Length: 109
Image (cartoon, rainbow, N blue to C red):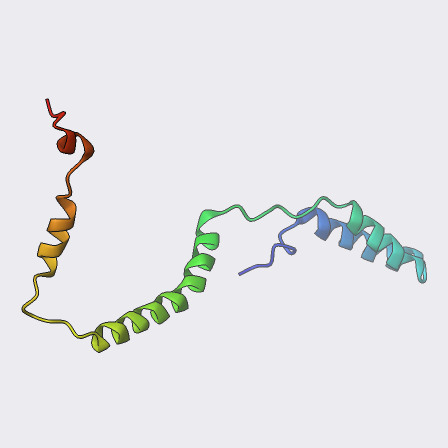
């Protein structure tokens, strides 16, 4: 994987020109200031607005959290006292059948 700095052609040209000017002029210490001035004049690197690298970064940050949550839920379910005779789905269905306001006042059409 190449660095974004090595892909910036303007920056590479600026370094090459100053390096070759150093050999020609033998400018002493002033060539370092020229290099930094040229680097500051170079436009900024393009931002990485590509979707997949950013998505990969998010996935790798979330992977340990998801594993930890999975382990915690597994421990929680192992320690719970679940009664095989209790109708859990019946409880959920009963909660879903709560009367609505029009049913209470007889306003059904």
